[in-house]
Length: 295
Ligand code: GUN
Image 1 (cartoon, helix red, strand yellow):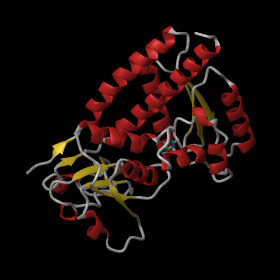
Image 2 (cartoon, helix red, strand yellow):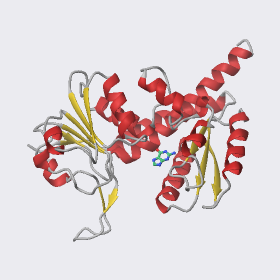
Image 3 (tube, helix red, strand yellow):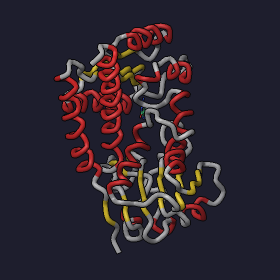
Image 4 (cartoon, protein in one colour):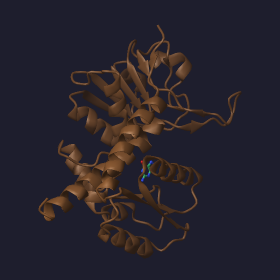
């Protein structure tokens, strides 16, 4: 059996089309959605991500503001920019690209963002709300994964789900979302003793570890849903220079029931969910404005 492949590019294009319609409706109401993006330092991967986010905004009719700072930026300067963006009613989303240089207290920066504009969902209050299954901005990558599961009609409730990776950006919020959806969730990580024991029990397996082709077909339960969040560049071998996921796609697709490719899987969904969160924030701002005006 060869697994069904979830096409993240096609799903993204469809969802982005819907987002563009909502953005245009807001603009017609006099509230063009606007995302402010901050990039500190010269990390090449971060620069690519930020450029892709800004371009995706433009295509969806979302205004973007970009603020670039050098590697040795003064944290006070960044904090004062954040305060100004928080206070600006024309800005609906604020994103600080991570990682930040070492002179920054990352948690303090994320908590300086107004929670109503925290479209990454990284503020401690939004993380807490997610853990309580209350309305919040949901971190974009795990949110995109849930959207992918919806499209293939995977019934999450009652399944055994295994997440490999415990980062604040993917692993932990992913585990919370799956728990909220009724899965029995195991979080594995670099200290897990027998990883394959866990992965072979998984009806849904999400990998976010940053190790190229690490999860092989023999580690997967037949018929499982395999979602590969990893984006790695191969250093050696015949495919050197190519992008690949944490999953060895060739062997995994012969065992899994459903699988996401890399590239063209989860990657495009991350930016799509960022655009959606920005539009949601702008919709809330437009409703609040209308309410205040007695409309
Ligand atoms: N660095 C890696 N992924 C992300 C993300 O989704 N948002 C931000 N702000 N930084 C990141």
